[in-house]
Length: 410
Ligand code: MN
Ligand code: MN
Image 1 (cartoon, rainbow, N blue to C red):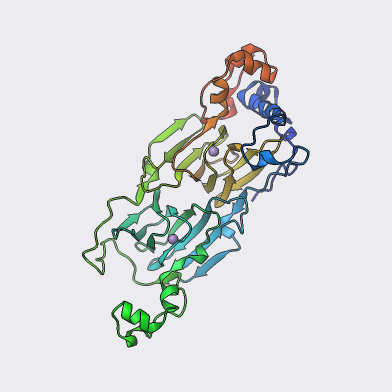
Image 2 (spheres, protein in one colour; image 1 turned 90 degrees about the vertical axis):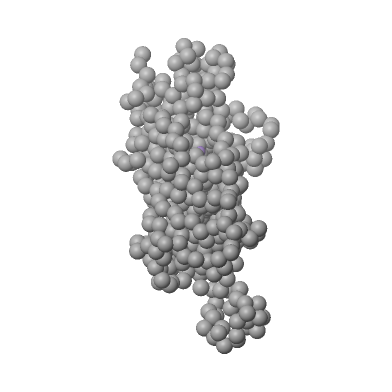
């Protein structure tokens, strides 16, 4: 992983240093200078909107690290059936609202029946195929098969199971709507039953005591068994009513918004109704392009890099700007309301999977904001001749294409 290139919290200078004349005259230069200026102006602001703004002006805390290597997390489980590595607040302290797990299952393996007492579960399939079962408190159940690009959502407390489908291993990214959730503290069926008095288990399940001799003595977590084939298996209880509230959605097939420098697909609760606490997005930033300066008024943003490499730059008020690099398998966390942009610094597409901890999507982009203000006022903020404001982008840019596309000539 690349290291933080702006460890000095007072370094808005980093943003303006080295800008070419062309950049100074382009939207990029204006944005950088504008933010530096806005950082200065923010010191006079009196309306605290987040914890950062409540800090004393004399000693604002440095921005925290906001990138973590989830694939090589110190907290993990590795066994014959697969593996799981996680990013909770213990490993990745900034990520208070979302925890993540990268899980791999081998053919025939299953993540055992379990539930989560404090978090809903979301997932995106990166490789292979997965079958899930889930039961709701109303007694309805669902079995769904997932392939690459599909997401699932299980509300908090609903009992579920994940199984590798077919002869190829699978890999999926799990997201939970609490950073304090740990995958290694779930309520697992074997853990429960193996720690319950055997005569109680026998009577509850209508089994003779001698049938329980081979019960596991502890949590199975990821078990192994027969390879799951395409044919849907029958339930133990054939009368179980099927859920009519889908737990599955194809993010890869969601409507795409295209811009010159990239594209984004978003799935809110509107598209995926059972998903009441999160919004999902799949974003591609093309080489030489960047996701424009913006912020999200209603949500934290949690990212996982599917492929490619880039840099995230965050603005946290008090002149604090911090840039960190990331690439495949890293997660990033951007606090609600913090300004940010994301550059593709590599030669291939930068593909990012995103979770927001709100059921609706909100964004305010710098270009759209400035476009919604009087020309003279914008000119006076930045010390610009009004003729340059007339040339500025006036609407949402989304993704800004390579520099050659955007050059401003005198
Ligand atoms: Mn789970
Ligand atoms: Mn964002």
